[in-house]
Length: 207
View 1 (tube, helix red, strand yellow):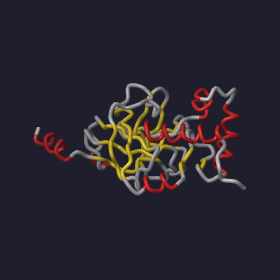
View 2 (cartoon, helix red, strand yellow):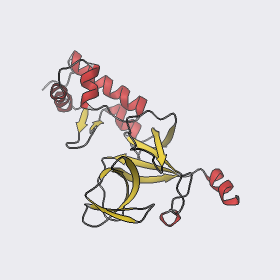
View 3 (cartoon, rainbow, N blue to C red):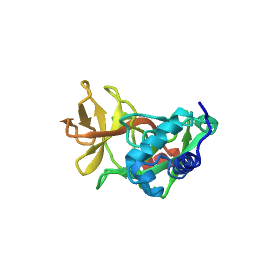
View 4 (tube, helix red, strand yellow):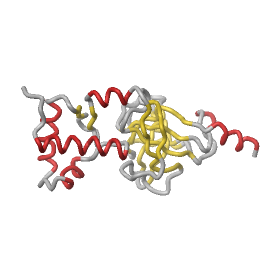
């Protein structure tokens, strides 16, 4: 089978690459369809399947924006720093939407975060027992699998909160309130690291 992309496939592939480089996350099927004036997302899916067969991307079924770049450029980038967009802060006054362009990006180790990760600033107190201080940034990998005892971001109705995953997979504990929730949430991604500005933490400690 030929691994050469057609003109349309090449254009879609480059659009995905540009989105990942510019925004830190891949585009949705709807966004690709709008960009190329395609009638439906199913047409986009057909093109993506062809691009995947030719070895340029990897798709993750059931994951929103589940497109991963797998060419040589991606492999090199994974071993270096990646730009992680800051998409909001906690507590959130509304649901965090990773597609929103943050005014700020953080550089983070690509072996931990990889492309598609997002960052959220923590403006909450009382999380010291979880190793998190006010002013820290949570590095979150969207769609990553979570296990009991791990921290994650979850959509709770109209807002987003930091939670701990409890045994059974369909239960979480909201860490800022200590409330247990079952089913009435949607996991956004797993917290893989906490980034701290030590000078800022020192100043707060002196205050």
